[in-house]
Image (cartoon, rainbow, N blue to C red):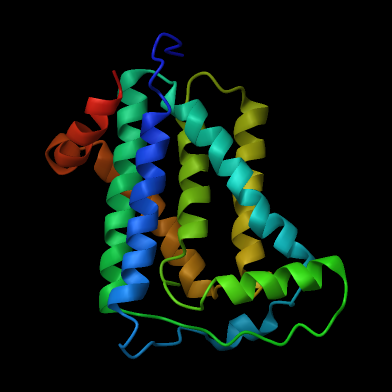
Length: 214
């Protein structure tokens, strides 16, 4: 790890700012467009489990820890990881504009803690910007980063993969996403990591990230 870089936190900060611009900008620019539903019959077979909102929201701690950890990694690895993140979010923005999506959320009639929390999520997070799922994209990208990080022991890599899979599953059991959104997020994460390893593709993104990776 490159512990001498005291500005390592700037890379995760860049990722957060770009994420918010993509998400908020996508909602704003596509708000009057027709929103498609990508739900298929198989989505109806997935149980609705309000308590899994705990996993759905727990992802923010998962992302924070790993993004900060990866930012402190060696230069080549950090630049590739954050270039992949920036590219992937750019692709998400295009989908949010060209293929706006929505889904039908079920009523949450319970009075338990998780029911109240899920209703709160529904209130603050509009059912848009669904394909590909940013939740799944970022979680799976963390798993990809763990797979390719030389400093992580095998048990940590497996734990990261399991956590990413559970987060992806929670997007379905909370009805925040459908199967197509999850598949799109995972596939985009894999493709973005691959593309970030090709200099002529990732160069504009890596140059930006490189300025912050002092």
